[in-house]
Image 1 (cartoon, rainbow, N blue to C red):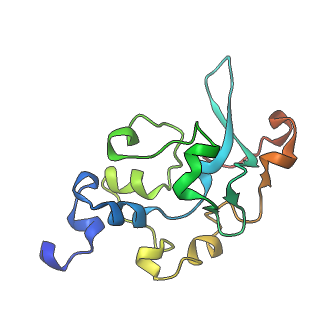
Image 2: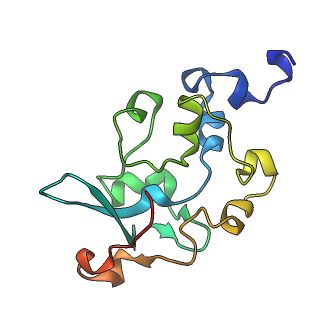
Image 3: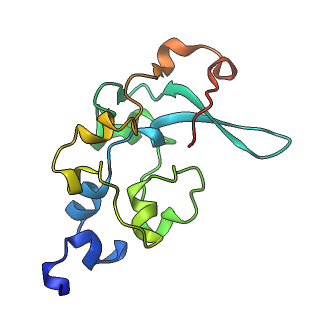
Amino acid sequence: MGALNKPFWEAKTLTEMSRAEWESLCDGCGKCCIHKLEDEETGELHATNVACRLLNRHSAQCSDYKNRKAYVPECVRLTPAKLRDIDWLPDSCSYRLIDEGYPLPQWHHLVSGDRETIHEAGMSVRGWTVSEDEAGDLENHIVDRPL
């Protein structure tokens, strides 16, 4: 199969993708929008079940993606240049997978054709998070889930 017949995520590098292709590559897991805590002694990151206040916890999508930096200044705008410097992205992150030469999983919407498959596969934050507005002390919300 030639490059013309391949889907864009197999035919292009991340830096070759258009903005629309880049944005569509996001699997919509919402894991980048949960708070993580770093162990001061070991440097190990721990996931919490606390989500950013802008995260729609049902869809696992940002409720104000375009303006998110105005409300959450520390929100990271992921780019190909920043990707390798961010060590807290989940192993299942589509950007990481493509960058590291792995295929997209069957539950990814670009493969399945359905944005619900990520939730059905249990790969998103749907159903196990609370809003940071309601959470209180983050240390009380550490969960045993992979980042």
